[in-house]
Length: 363
Image (tube, rainbow, N blue to C red; front, side, top):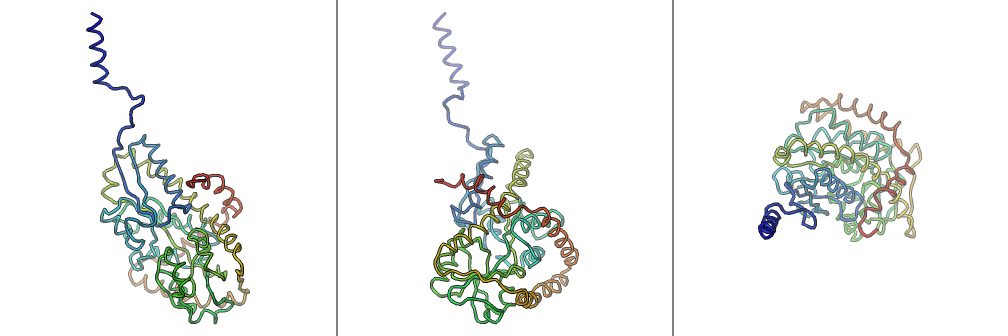
């Protein structure tokens, strides 16, 4: 009788193995995520935390593998790579493919964004408010946007509008249009290429946010930063998913993606403002660096010169049938709304140091 019981127990264990000490079950959904930013950039760190949070809230049913430094597709090709299923999720800039996302081009155009936190909140609100056909071939998860772009130069400081003449500045999309309206020549290149191009003298500088001084290690080659925030454009970053992959997820997992993405919007906004301070501080650790502040009168000249970019947009996109006046009125209202609620730069720095820096590998 005892032998019979032992055999029965053994068979039971084989049929119903216990979980203790066994490997976790394989995830039901494995997804790839093509990331614009390099591995140690805090936006990449946040993206990994986002993926980990989704894995945890789905009890391991979803595993997302992040490929930083656009390992699966170049920044301009990322959106189409998601559409075509080359990667399941992608993060890049809408402005890298001018004309493809005409409504969102207006968001990038200077509107007096005071910082990246406000620009991020407005960029997300814009998507929530309007039904944009330009994004219907993917499932957008969320958006964020950087602080106003300024002028970097390597050898020639820029004190006046006349100093912009003849400069070749790395810039893309709306940033390139602004640079050219101010008298420079735009040079299309990704942030990953910018430091090398400046060090070789291929370009004279860049029009870009101060974040890249540290986030993309451009401070070692940049000598002058001209703060021209009133003409500073922003750049909207998208995080989108392949539409078929999204539609094949069960509703409970879709809800997890939606919930976590909503929570992550402000986290990225805080990182953008952290990087503004960190980039400037890092820049000043190098000898011979200079921040240039334009006088009110000089800044007014820059604003007048850059106004042609928005004027041209409004005419061109209205001709396409876009409700540009509705877009513009909405953007101005949301900028005012979020500007009144924005945390201070110090609050953003403190939050990032407490919540994101500890997640950096090796920290």
